[in-house]
Length: 69
Image 1 (tube, one colour):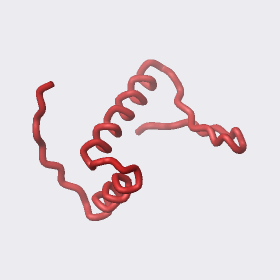
Image 2 (cartoon, one colour):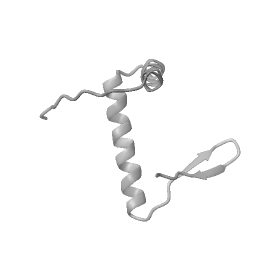
Image 3 (cartoon, rainbow, N blue to C red):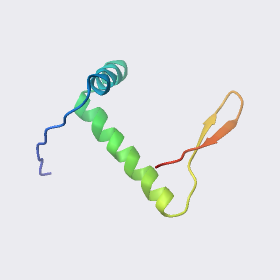
């Protein structure tokens, strides 16, 4: 697999969030961003196909539709 490098400028708040998420999940920042990209791609494809995406709270079975802008 070919790899390409990029520079990413984040605000202090965004960088703190990335640090916190990578630490709490035991993942590198790069791995976390790759996972986020795959999730975004999956959700976007489903919405473009006319599907609806929901998040369900197991304790109450409450469902919230995921909306993308």
